[in-house]
Image 1 (cartoon, rainbow, N blue to C red):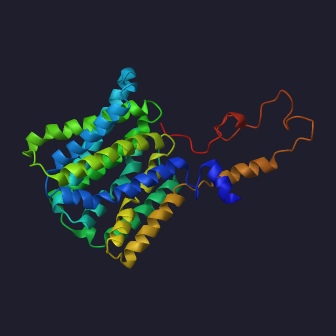
Image 2 (cartoon, one colour):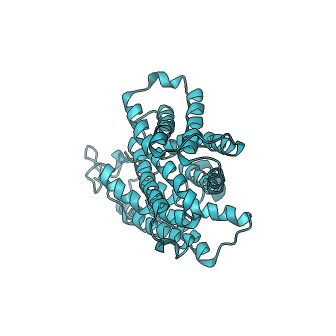
Length: 343
């Protein structure tokens, strides 16, 4: 009975369909490290990322070509802003994977987890809640354990600094998507985001001295495959983060190394004890970040309210206002959903 009720409400283990969509994205992300690492033997990072998002952008352009006629200035601004963070994040992380071990990249990239609350505060003027901070702390601790205790003690070289820059860009992307969510057309903004990321990477190639690589089925297959998936992923992120706050999205995204570890285990790798503990902490952070103790106080107020007799109408006197909520608004005027979209 509980299972059928959860299915009807679109929730599973306390996660709504928007949360589950982000979890699915994170599962896919965890499988891409090996693909990108292999492709880097045949291509430079900027060309690979540019070709990848060119594929994604052109596919999105083909699918949503009719809706682009109504593109507004706000759609363009939102798409370009998010597209800049995508280009920086993916290009810098791909560059780092050329010279830095995967465990070190995982640890440095994990810094976007504690960065998101700071960016959320600076950009959205929304201070983090205690439950969200606790969830972020659990996820960050889990990522440290998953990467290994020695990952954070290495000297920062060029690859490490590039990966650190990708973490900053990743945090900015999450917050900006939430900033524009609900204010722009998802399809138009997605096309602009993907094409902006592609163009910026291609334009940066001459400045970095990177040339077009020789043809290889390896980088072509990887770029086209990941590009096709990126089109779906970016559209899903824009849709889901209309309802999922930035901090909760961050905790879900931080599960990327967990799925990467599971894929590695299927390929023959064995996770040590600390890594398993880290994975458990990340999962715990997802649920802790969504704790809502204020509901208990609301229930207690409802229990204290006089119950109207049958046929006598509302409990409060006729013509008087309902009992105000702590925020000063009548209870009937408050949102029915506890988790309203950010922005």
